[in-house]
Length: 171
Ligand SMILES: [Mg+2]
Image 1 (cartoon, rainbow, N blue to C red):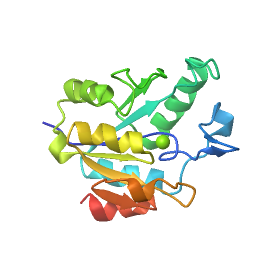
Image 2: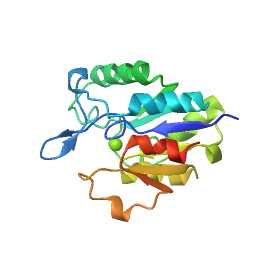
Image 3: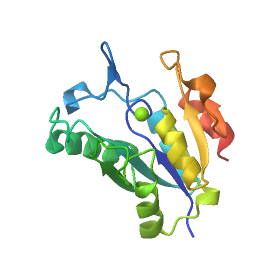
Image 4: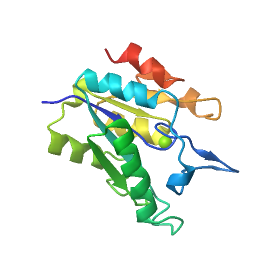
């Protein structure tokens, strides 16, 4: 069985666009990667972890963005940080089994890649990421910054404020 590090996308791999409400970038032009994401992905690859992105993109079913734009951003990230795979949920209903906080996408990845969750990690910046991770008993890493007011209520295995800190957790 393989080990993997799962990454959320918006707010974890790339910056959110901060308007009244924080939003995901709509087009590649608006994409800004987080500091250290390239460095840390190289580090994890060297440690033989699969790198897999797990992302909710409900703007598509809300009619606020297109699949084409989302896929363009995802493919760019995939090349940039050498991801092994990407799982996307376009659903907006939390009852959808693929949409985080539900674990559907994690199970799909586990089956396809033969992943051992016990040796794997899920890194995300939202409650929904940590919940999805807990449901499959993977180790969870909550990545937050000063714009995120949720962090006091989050019960993750680890908390980080910089992606650099991943290298002191995953060895
Ligand atoms: Mg996020």
